[in-house]
Structure formats: C-alpha cells, structure tokens
Length: 504
Image 1 (spheres, rainbow, N blue to C red):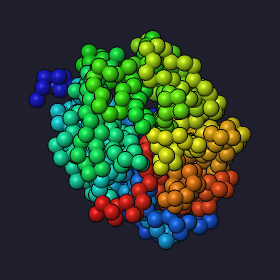
Image 2 (spheres, rainbow, N blue to C red; image 1 turned 180 degrees about the vertical axis):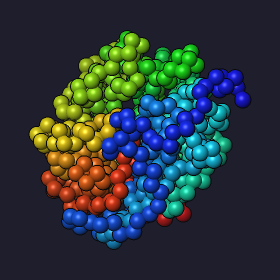
Image 3 (cartoon, one colour; image 1 turned 90 degrees about the horizontal axis):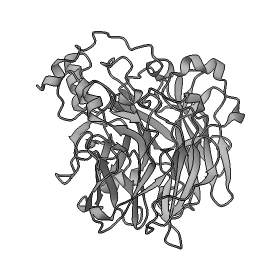
C-alpha cells in the first residue's frame, strides 16, 4: 500500500448519514434495491404505443461517506429501470457492483474518500468509479458511465453488473465520457476521455466506434488547461469539446483538497477537431469570456459550413460546492443559465468566439433533442426550466428539499422556428428531473412524441414518473406513482424494446 494512504484518518464508525443538505430531506440516500410490478397510474393512461425501458442512474451512497461534507456527486451508482409495455409500467432498481461498493460492503464502512481524490482513500483502489452519471445503450451493451474511468457493463434485463467494459481491449483511454453520442445516420458511437492518462493530465483522447463495436478514429490531444469536459457535441464533420473552468491540481489533491477548483481567470474554451482523419495538431481551442457551459443540446453545420452549437451558459459557478482558490462561490439561488447558440467558422484562424445568441433567456438545463436528428439541424429542444410564474411553494418545500441539486419546476419545449417555449408544470409542490424524449414512431415528424421524466413530489416525499404528449403539452397523459423516493439523478435514456431485441 502506498505511503500516502497511511496518513489518512480511519474510516468513520458512524452508521448514520450527516444531516447536511446533500444527505437530508429529499436528498437522503434512497438505498433501495428490488422490483415492483404494475406501478400505480394515478392519472391518465400510459400510451400503449410505448414499448421500451427508461433507464436512469442516481448517485446514491450505500453507506455514510468517509468525508462528512462529501459532494452529492460522489454517491454510488444506483440504476432504475422503468419497463413500459401494453400500457403498464414495472420498476426495477439495482446498484452497480463497482470495486468500491463491493469492498465497502465487505468492510462494513466507507473506504473511498473525496470526489476523484485517491489521496483521501483508506485503501488503494484499482478503479475508483462510482458508475453514477449516465446509463447508455450501444451494440447490445448497457453502460453505466462516470467520466473518470471505463464504463461498467450492465445486463439490460436483470440490471446485474457484468463488469468493467474496455470494449474488448480496444479502449485507449483511462477515462470514458459520461455523454457518448450515437450518430443516428451512421450508427457510430462517438466518445472521448479527458484526463485520459490519469489524474491531472491535460490529455484528451477522442475515439469513434463502428456499429459492430470496432474502433475507428483515435486522436490524442493536449488541452490548454486541465479542466472538466463533462459533455461534448458532434456534427457531421466536427467534434466540439466545451471546457468547464473547474481545474485540477495534483498538489492540492495530495494535501487533501478537492480535485476541482473554480478558476474565474481563464477563458471558456471550446476545442474543435475534424471528426474524421484528424491529427493531434488539427485541434483549435476557441475562446470566450469565462463561463460555465451546461449540457449540450446539439451541434450542426449550416449552409456556410459554420458550426451552430446550442447549450445553456451561465457566468457563475454551477458547482458552487467547489469554490475558487479564495473560497468564493455564488449563492446557489443566484445561478441561472440561459439557453444560448454559438455560430462560428471552425476553419477560422481567429480563435475568439463571436458573442452567442440568447435563444431562451430563462433559467434552464438538462437540454435534450429528438435524437433522430442529432448532428444535423434541429427544430425542437426539450429542457428542465425554472418558471417563476408557477408559484412553487418554496416556504413549505425548503425544509425538506435537501441540497446540491439544481431546482427546476417545469419541463419546457422550445420551438426553434417560432422561438416560443411551451411549459408543463406538475404542481406547486413539485420539482422536475431531467426529461427524455421518445418519438411517437420511427417515422414521426421531429419532436412528435412524448416527454418523460421523474418528478419530486415534496407533499408526499415520493417520486412520480410523468409522461407528457408533445401535441398537448400543458397536461400529463399519465402520472405513474412510485411508493418510494428517488433522490436527484443525473442522467438517463430511453431504450426501445426493438433495439434490445435486435442486439440479443
């Protein structure tokens, strides 16, 4: 065992979670594993056309963490699966059997330390992943992803953990994005890893995978700073890497500090490389004023060959629990992201980005499109949004909300042609999690289908799955009740039953 582990304090003996906001109220760890058949539909009817599974994953600590003020991002990956068929919904939930979870269950206490900081661990881990950020499906593989490690392969039916997945030995990077992209035209799986040669390294590795699972392009890049690249975007001919100004410093980590620290003194970078046949020297790091880029909606090329790139942007540090070097962090209630559009020439030698256009000047995040038009021009964006007109009952909700997660009270449907947004608000005692879009049929017009997402009901302290028809967006077509509370998740996706059948 390396010497730096010996100087750490012993694992906590507490069997109770801290009363800090990220572990209390609605954010108290759920820790449920099991299944429930025929969930109660308390309003409307589940569309009979729906046949598939909504997979989602949440950070959900299975034991009180070693560090009392641990970031809520550091919980163990707990996967929920909502299987919908013939107008009925069945639910199954199971933890990913990561090395961390298995060894901590054997020890009966937390062994892993702070978020992405191995120097605070009680023991040495081969792989520190919590597999808690996204759950995606490709080529017969259900992959539980966290961006600091390879993904874990999961059985799509039983949710049993198969094991770490290095794509049959082809994975070139030590890390793997939590937001891989699937090109709906070519079937390619497009991926990358940052800190790709280990903690604190500036290396970024881009790679694409053919529909049959064989790796194609692999390009190694060096970033201008060691910073977070949580999401990225893909066009027909270009790859875009927006960098969040949360930077890593190994010396700080060795001293017991955080992996990430907000840096207000560096630009907001977008790295751009050709999608096919690129070399390391082809990368361009475009710059904009310091800002926090949110999840990407989509990117495409217009008739002039310029890149059009849509995503939420805010000048403030969304991850306020990782402040700057002086301890400065914004008041969480003051953070708001506008939905913005960058349009720029990727061939330009001028690396200063033009000022973005504000598409929607309302606080929003978790943007999604109809994935059938990914990499090409899109006309519809779906998002989680904070609508002050809803009249959310903050005084009653505040004591039981818990903390860390961003509060959004509505789903939004933004029409890029009319520039108008429709909103679905589930109620004054409710907040929404990330929505997903499901097309009405394979050949339905773009944006015609259903929006689905988990809803936090603070009146009952339980969770609901809401389904909204995009043709009648003001009310739900079905509300499905869960007799349990599922804390804030990060990401999820719909997998059509036909796709799993074809891969079986």
